[in-house]
Image 1: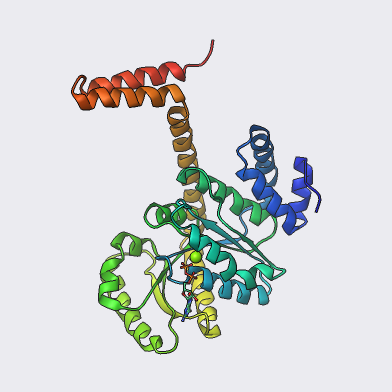
Image 2: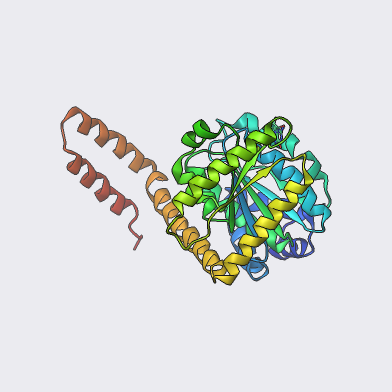
Length: 333
Ligand SMILES: Nc1nc2c(ncn2[C@@H]2O[C@H](COP(=O)(O)OP(=O)(O)O)[C@@H](O)[C@H]2O)c(=O)[nH]1
Ligand SMILES: [Mg+2]
């Protein structure tokens, strides 16, 4: 495909469900160049009315839990059923997990080759906020290009989960067998983010253990949600070798979506996704207006040193820096 240039060329390619056009559009929104940023903004406006129709599904779990492998098998299964599936990955710490991204590309090879699939490795540069902004825009581009199911794989541990949770309709947590200890190891906060929990790699000798682990999780969940009227996360066992498990996973996802719609929470969730996006855009903007300025970074370093030596108080350091911040960001008259 030739290189796209104008907004209408990009738009035509996307609405025409052209995979190469989608890849180019994502490259455009990831670009840091000023001329691309403008074009990207125009494009996002143009395609906005064609977005929102997919189901957005996030996958999280410790490295090695089997996210990429499951997405590959599950995505391929859904493509074979006639769905169009897009996969995006979010990786706030690409330097740490560089190896696993390389692995992910090969792990999703089968899906990436499927004519109804689109697999995009994560944007690697930028702040966590920046990466996540691009991922949200990429979701919208995939929707404009007619993808019905969008998977987002989180790779970062910690902050990454909360951010992905805020951009998806369904959040799936993959856990492994090992029960007791394993349960202790999972941060309670992450368990509470999950809509579905998959005890993964439930095959071979591990299947029996997985069933026990599932029971353990179910009892923790029923305890955590004892007095709650919200959705009680379901626990299931999954293996990429069992098509029945993939069918069951899909049915659970659809069940959850129906529950959201019946309880008037689906649209509410989409609204909250937009609000969290707006808030993170503001946070990015403010961050940039401070840390993006060399003189402010220099002053910060300087006042930090003086404060640590005891020459000035924290309050004085703060006032100095904020005074300069206001001056630097003053509109030119
Ligand atoms: N037995 C078994 N192994 C699996 C399954 N899913 C993934 N694996 C293996 O677990 C390892 C890590 O998988 P990967 O998808 O890279 O995990 P990620 O880091 O969570 O994306 C790989 O060696 C996979 O082959 C499964 O369902 N059953
Ligand atoms: Mg992976």
